[in-house]
Every structure is written in structure tokens, then in C-alpha cells.
Length: 237
Image (tube, rainbow, N blue to C red; front, top):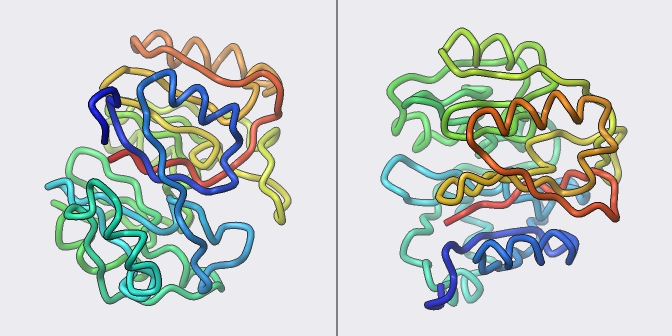
């Protein structure tokens, strides 16, 4: 991270330039990650499928993925924070969700039998959910969440997280019928800013989402020249 950057982030090489411009204006320095050959092609470079952050700031990823891209990882200015773990990813669900977890108040929320053991061990407790694409499905800030998944909504509310339930439509994901709000957004906590990957005004719940976020003291930024699309979020370092 250079002296002018406020934060670094890992992103898909497919993340549109208009989103990267917003992140740059916020002080972000981006690093495009390689594809993982063991994930389905449309999500093979999605950060929410490939990385998870432990409570001490360590970023865990698949050992084979790290080895295949060792030169890339070692070139990162924050390479000392990346830790490979032995879990093996595979393209068919649920063998692709080892890192796709929500963290909330010490809890890990996800499909627990498939989550990397290091992530489970780092949590105060693990909450099992039916929706294995947990992080993909949720826009998660420190004090609130937004999701279209009713089961995740209930789990989050039951664990004292203020959560907004929205429509599951209006978010694209190339190669699939639809995408998820978590994969179509990111939260820059140090700036209390939510960035959407597309024009939020095109979502039928735009006003509800806008009011929910802004009432919690966060700003919203998004490009207006593209619809909302899921690129696997970003992993802020």
C-alpha cells in the first residue's frame, strides 16, 4: 500500500473500471487476483469464494491456489498476512464454499461442515445455515446487514444484527440466473461507505436500501452507467 492509499483490496480482474474509479477516489489500491481452476468459471476469480479474514487480520486461502500463484501472492505488499490452508476447493456445491462465510460478533455463519477448519477454530461459535453462499448473499457491515435470503435474515436477526430483507431480483451474475447483494457490493469501514457494483437506483428496493444504510451513518456510492452485478465483492486488507 503506497503512502496515498487508505486501504488495499483484492478483486476480480472482471471488476469494472467504473467501480475501481470509485474505490480509487476513496483511497483504495486494488490488486486483481488470478482465477482458481477448481471453481466454476463464472466465480473462479470471486474474492468471497477464495479468501476469509481471521480475527487477527490473517487472510486464509486454499493452499493449492496459493502455490499455483505464489509469485503473485509474494509480490503483494501485504503478503505476510496471506496464509494458505489445506482445505481443497471443488466446482460443485457445497465443495466451493470453504471461505464463503459471514463473521459477526465472534461468530462464523456458513455451511459449517464445508468451512475451512482454521476459520471454525478462530470463531467463538459456528452457526450452520442452509445457504452455503453465505457471504455472497449478504452485504455485511460492522453493525448491520442486507440480504435477500430469508434463512440468513433470520439467523442474523436472531444474533442481534440489524438486517434488511430485500428482493432477490435485479442483480446479475454472468453464467447464472441471478447474483447476490454481497457479491455486488463492498463496505469500506474506515470511511463508513458502502460501494455498490452498479446503479442501485435500478433495484426495486432502492429507497428502502438507501434509507437503511444512510440512517446508520454510512454513505453510499455507485456507478450509474451499469446495472447491479455480482463480481464476488472485494477483500479489503
